[in-house]
Amino acid sequence: MTELADLTARRLLAGYENGDFSPVEATRAALERIEQVQPLVNAFVRVDAEEALAQAEAATERRRRKEPAGLLDGVPVTVKDLLLTRGAPTLRGSRTVRAGNSWAEDAPSVARLRAHGAVLLGKTTTPEFGWKGVTDSPLTGITRNPYDTARTAGGSSGGSAAAVALGAGPLSIGTDGGGSVRIPAAFCGIFGMKPTYGRIPIAPASPFGTLSHAGPMARDAADAALLLDVISGEDWRDWSHLGPARALTPALAEGVEGLRIAYSPSFGGQVAVRPAVAAAVRTAVSRLAELGAYVEETDPDIADPVDAFHTLWFSGAARLVQPLGPAQRELLDPGLREICALGARYSALDYLAAVDVRTDLGRRMGRFHTAYDLLITPTLPVTAFEAGAEVPRGSGHRRWTGWTPFTYPFNLTQQPAATVPCGVDADGLPIGVQLIAARHRDAVVLRAAHALYEAGVAGLAGPPAPPSAHTP
Image (cartoon, rainbow, N blue to C red; front, side, top):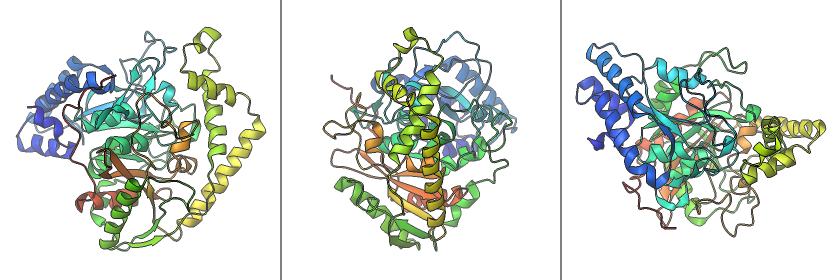
């Protein structure tokens, strides 16, 4: 019944309710799909089929008694290997983490999945400690794109994006410190969202501080809203959480009529966007106007904050590896070692100056959103490039931030931002449009994204199944 692997979470739940199939059947289908695609894309660090089937059997029994545990009872899900999972190692893509440690705690979002009866299929790949916008690490190797396995899946939640795109579980939780949910979601043709910082509690705290969010990755906005409703809310372990959260799923039906949308194709000419990307994004924006939104082509009053972002990001990386001895540091990804060395040179005054830039950027975006409900940009100016590289060949960029200028600014401002697939380029590679709202306006992002899916603008036919194997 491998066709069950291609259903959304909501369609699985409807099938369970109607008695069309069971959580055991859906979980077997997802596990079969994992077995089929893992050798090709390398999306998983760990899969525990026996435990997943035991969870599915328990969910099937609850369904038989008409006593579901929660909103996701019996739905197969995956979790990025930066989030703690009780009973399984969280290796974070690093050879410096000991698998034999005590793994007795769930991250808050993982605990919520369990409480709602979700079936945990396994842990997905990440670059070492999630440090860059592509997914390869000394521990797990390269994660490849479902649409072309010679290309990158993006990162740092690349394993989650590839898994969802290929039917290896309809839902996944990723993390996003500079675009790490949105980048791979855009490259792999799925929906990914970074909610307002603090909506999803995180524990232990990220070494990258309040830049890093957890976020849902799914085949569409409605599934993501459902997942957000499950994993949002309070947790005493995260002092920065926002507290009780209003359900987002009911807002999906509100549509976009009357929304004030600012469309910025290139941040005022600051970003060189590939023509195919620009055309697909413009088509999506035009459709929102046809659906009743007021659209104006304009740019936010911001300059590229990359230097401030680097100061905060590289400092966080340096603090992360500070306890490691020389021998352990030699095990690190060379690029990570390089940014750690840079981060260790910053002073407290350098760090506080970057905080000042961040504060000003947040103020500017707050003022911008008094006039506009949404800002729309391309998610990325490029489509997926060669696997195993941090930057596109010949781009002239030194670091991953060179080709992600539309994503990391909104980690600085802590705003909700999502990517929606809106087409493909001439090579058949997915293109994403990014929707950004003011802090705490997560529902507006989801409303607009859902409207694009309902209008047939969002969503792709899906990658080949299985994808063609990469030939070195």
